[in-house]
Length: 443
Image (cartoon, rainbow, N blue to C red; front, side):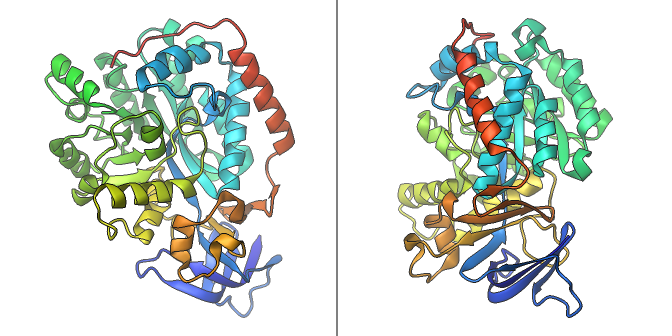
């Protein structure tokens, strides 16, 4: 497939942060062929008028629980411990594999609609999520969450061996658009022997791991009591930060200065989900300090039961506004740095390090934003417009690996009406029957 986008403004996010007005973008198969002017002999299958549109790299989401769309609005105005124990882990006692499939499909549609083409998912029945990724045309890093505290406390009673079999079966699937990882829940829930098994299997299969880490000061305190180590130091001692592929951890809200230095030295990617922290009243990770120490930070929505949606555009401004205000420092986190945290950094965390730049030879993972709405005018600074004024409704086109997934309100790979009907029906079925918590969070 060959596509020519004419007269478009390209926000490249290349090393020079070039903004190129009125250029051509030529896409050939899975790659960007040209940025500026298409070759004279380029014969496109489709030509798109890019006037008043801005092209930029598509977004990647560094950590979520996609099928939790079914729990959106189910657990509101609760602190973290009650949110888990009284709502989330209760609802998931009624979860079925088919629920996961339709919940993930709803998430895929929402992500595509708001300009995201890739996500790191950490949930259950990940083979069903993988099927959705393959069908939708998206990219993903998929980890089947495992607690390791008894099959009776796992969703669906799935044993550890099945989660490993998933990693082996699906890694590299969908033409390389799917990567897999081991998915222990966390060092505060998963026993030491199971974490060691995760390390052994990751090394055998040549993959990484994706899990929750240091979400609160209470977790750090209890880790020091149990192990004499902070959570990052504890998992480092087990080998979880030295796997064949980079480790991806979520949150690190209470990471100490020593923890941050360790994470940076090990090349760990840390998913930062600010809306969840704000909504659940959690500690905000010290993002400026972590960046200064060289930690690889990537923006993430987390699950829609805590974040409510998959809007990466909203996260850009949440992060920027929070830290500019909290530190009384309007110059920190400039707009292109924020954009890289939603594009290049999470793409690399998922195992797609070439994505996140509009340049010849790079993957054709991009979106076009319509800049004609009143909130865009005047268009003094398009990068600022993307970060501080753009809405998901401005997304006009979305490509992943050169395949057009979304065009002006039309989903090209997903049956959105069927997805909406199935997801809502299953959500109400799940929470409308007798439920009991599978396990208890104690920190």
